[in-house]
Amino acid sequence: MKQIALKIDVDTYRGTREGVPRLVEALQRHHAQATFFFSLGPDHTGRAIKRVFRPGFMKKVSRTSVLEHYGFKTLMYGTLLPGPDIGKKCGDIMRAVRDAGFEVGIHCYDHIRWQDHVAGKDAAWTEREVQRAVDRYTEIFGEPPKAHAAAGWQTNRYALRQTQRLGLDYSSDTRGTHPFIPTWDAEIIACPQLPTTLPTLDELVGRDGISLDSVADHLLGLTRTPSATGHVYTLHAELEGQRWMPIFEQLLQGWQGQGYELVSMRQYLQGLDLAALPRHEVSMGCIEGRSGTLAIQS
Image 1 (cartoon, rainbow, N blue to C red):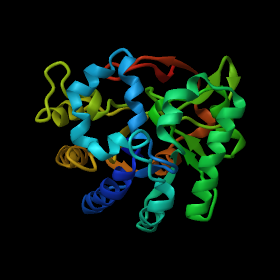
Image 2 (cartoon, rainbow, N blue to C red):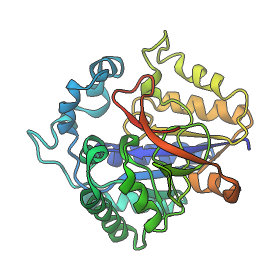
Image 3 (tube, rainbow, N blue to C red):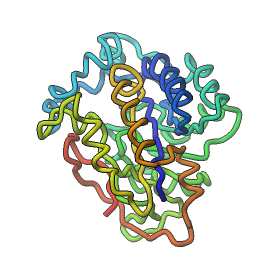
Image 4 (cartoon, rainbow, N blue to C red):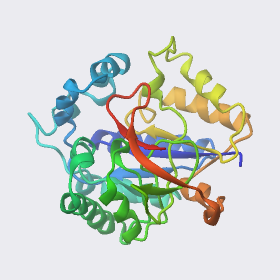
């Protein structure tokens, strides 16, 4: 299956307002498809300062210049500045993405709150957060969501259960190697997982001699030999949608040159034999280049 599904995580107000329209234009220019997963509530990016105590966080910050990509104002949201409500202020941009023919889905309600807390929360907290996102998505798009991609690849048993209870067609909450049916402590969750299979730009730049000039070639080297089940590549509206747009365009051209079809997550799903998907346990583990733990396909 020579496909690469492009999964676009939209984390912030600035990323929605500035990065998303630029990505739509670039994708249209290259005749590529993608799925946009939106953060739908308040932008509290500034509260991520608490991650300074997380192992590996400062190393990642030093490699990728957070201030350059997010801007000073965004880094103050939720602390010195009130966090703008992304869904209320940017609903027209989100609908324009859908109207341009791109698939849309839920990333989260409050990105920082989900990413920093969901792993240790109970059923009531998790279900409340998911429902907030579902309600806001339905308000913006006039229909219930059909896809979910967890912020920061953070999840728990109750969040996975919600993907099944909501009747989602698929979810992309994990890192892994191929599509699967998730289990948690052997409990089967009847919602396919389409994990991110390729490293992200911010995990690569500054590591092992990889620079902004060489990172596209490095990623293209990883896809030179096709995978039997294709790939999922996660990009960010705040990175590839802004200063790293030239790198993203290199990737688009390179992947098409390698013979890949660049598709949405739904198109990727439609090419799978869902009845034959293997079951894999979801556990929390580490990914090189990213701080902390995240949900991985075991």
